Image (cartoon, rainbow, N blue to C red):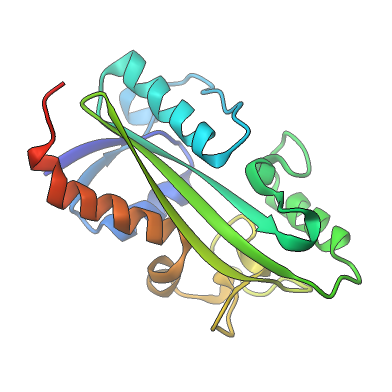
Length: 199
């Protein structure tokens, strides 16, 4: 079984990824490898942030690893909050405050189109591979549902009548931005991993 470090201590992300991977890989968190560093995220893009985090782990621990960065992009807000999604309402990374800021900025706005994007940076034996997942939808005028995390209660994916926070885990993971990116990651690992060159 493959062993990978997921460069996060976010319990929501770890649980969600564990559900998607379904035992194909043994997943280690930053805590599991005794990494207590505050890994910098200073990039201007999701790709740059994801790469920065995985490269940080590889450079210090020489362990196969991956990291993700995710952003909510809202058309009427010039694709805000984007790379700043987690800290949109401040450094506290408070989801409720972030949601309130989005709803306030969209008050009276008819164009509520949005998308979630997730970029995964995988480093295997020193080589980096990028995977992206995207789901289009719209921002609801109010919260719906209590599952999920982050902006899930106000995001309605195209073609569905439930917000991400109203969906069960299996449905959300099958269509979500992170789910789509991880599916590409898993497919790559299962098909390409045995042929990858030694570092």
